[in-house]
Amino acid sequence: MNYCFRTRLGWVQVSESARGVSAVKFNKAGGGNKLSKNTAKIKDFLAGRKIDLSKIPLDLAGASSFQRRVWRLAGKIPYGEVRTYGWMAERLESSPRAVGQALKKNPVPIIIPCHRVVSSSGIGGYSCGVRFKKKLLDMEGALK
Image 1 (cartoon, one colour):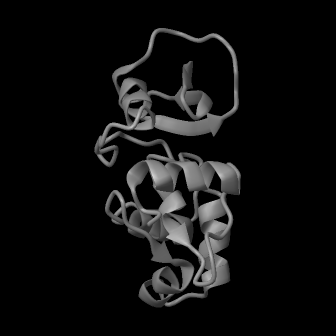
Image 2 (cartoon, rainbow, N blue to C red):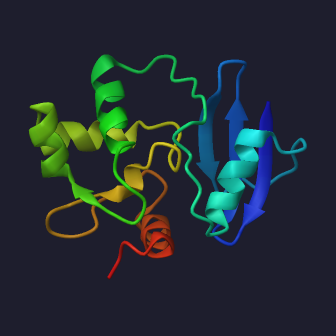
């Protein structure tokens, strides 16, 4: 089931299977069904409300064990805080580049808050675009 809605940050499409949320995409305009409980939480978060999205069930079929480890660690980064790719890599006994590649494949940005992972020399990349990453971090008060 797909749900589309408009936020102050742009259009969002959320896809859900019977197991949980399987994808979150941005700039996907269009109609959709009445919002599910999970999608309503995402919409509230994007409206600037401090909502805990970590309890939303996810469908991460096809993800590697390394990707799941990276995403699990990213999910522990508190709202309004950031960590570096290097910080993540140290804890996972990996490289910052491998961490970045795993985060790039995150099918549910926002729920798994990969936007909270930044470069040691700047903001770093983001699958939804650096401009959107900056907006999310600014919304959370992480950019000081």
